[in-house]
Image 1 (tube, rainbow, N blue to C red):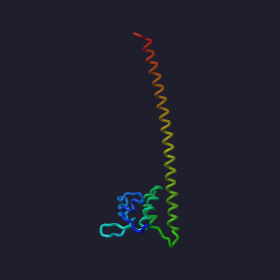
Image 2 (spheres, rainbow, N blue to C red):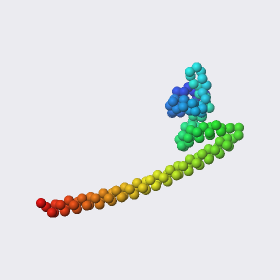
Image 3 (cartoon, helix red, strand yellow):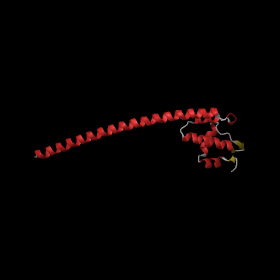
Amino acid sequence: MSNIYSISELAREMKVTTRAIRFYEEQGLLLPERLGQKRLYSLRDRVTLELIMRGKRIGLSLAECKELISMYDPAGGNSMQLSRLLETISSRRQQLDQQVMDIQKMQAELDLAEQRCRLALERASGVSKETNNDNRRAGP
């Protein structure tokens, strides 16, 4: 495995589009070297892209990913980065918990609305049948 990647190699390996890679580059997250028109991505760029993709999978914003990546400090044991990541995970978990509760409330409201509609339909059908039966009995 080489430590230098072209944009197409990196895109293929990481299963993203070249457009996405260029976007992350525009955002200052990836810093490829240039050889004429060709972009050359380093192992660090590959790891950064991997971290971005992992962050997206757990629902982090690009700004949150960028902040966490910028805090990388192997000499300091990455304790600040890891602490911030834990805070971000906790916040994201709270958001998801709230969304789950909101969805459950919405489902309960839908159940109630459905139940009321079915009951109203049954009543309307019963009234229609009774009206039709009365009309047939009355005859011409």
